[in-house]
Amino acid sequence: MSHSYDDRVLALAGLAQALQQVRRIAETGQSETDAAQPVLDSVFRIDADSTEQIYGGRRALEPGLRALADYLSNRGNDPLLPRLALATVQLERRFSSESNTLAAVANGIASIAPQAEAQGSAHPDVLAALGGLYADTISHLRPRIMVQGNPHYLGQPGVVSEIRALLLAAVRSAMLWRQLGGSQWQFLLARRALAEAVDRQLP
Image: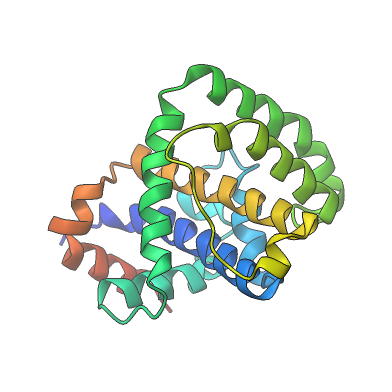
């Protein structure tokens, strides 16, 4: 059995984990720090030696791997999550073809990195900076990612910043998935191979 899917499902788990937190914040106004932190950290880890290192280890991606396992076995309980993931994958393809936007995001991340190093990537000021970067760049591309949730929370600037920061992390994971050879076709044609790879990664 080829393990070529193993790194890919880690990237996919990163995508699922970021979007799971987007959904949670949009509905409740709060993220789970343990789940949000690894995907936010991944935005700043551009030159890691392995996919695992980008997220700070496999265990850090357990929520995303479990969400992926549920989806692949048709046990997923949030119908909006797969739709958000598909929209993110489509947006990433557009983003990757826009060299000016790519450069602007890379420069923005580099300028926010020292602050993230000092305060932590989940600090409100860092989330505001990442959210602002997303709003100024990727959010202008089509298809726009529409986040549904509780209007009370979606009207709060801090919540909006964190959602945008996590969408940036989701796009980062979608880019990694594609760079590792992932494609939309694999969801249709290779679900079993993906599911087996997820099982190998779960403790």
